[in-house]
Amino acid sequence: MKYFSKNIIYLILGIVLIIGIGIIYMLKSDQSAPIVEEENKNTQFLKNYDVNEFMPVYLSKEQIASIYLNDYIQNMLYHREEAYLSLDAGFKKTYFPTFEDYDSYVEDLLAKSMTFSLKSASEKSSNSGKVYTVLDTNGYSYTFEVTAVMVYTVQFNTDR
Image (cartoon, rainbow, N blue to C red; front, side, top):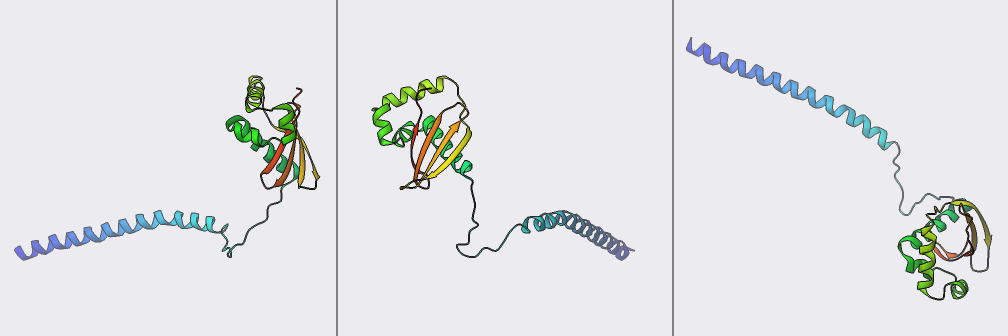
């Protein structure tokens, strides 16, 4: 009888162990199934690109003009020295001979609590590159003379 009771204990432990492994296996297989489906959804958008392969992006003149306007406004708000340096040389000499003049003009402009966004834009070619004329929602006109990507000089109307 002693031999039989020892074997029963091992038999019960073996059955519990097999049931436990089965439960763990079923739980793990259920958890991994959605992840595999999710990975398949994500991989359909991936492509094996070759070295130096790129996808061309075509921007309209309004989008390009908006990029230059936003860049200048961001510089005017947060990096005034850069904005001052991007002014056209003749325009700077005529209207803002010193940085302090430009800084006070910008402070007066910001005191009006204006929002700057593109209303209309036009594009012309020049000898040195492209010229974008932008009208914002406040009625201000900006002229960006672009010589290279994100290399520009700007003029704007100061009479408003």
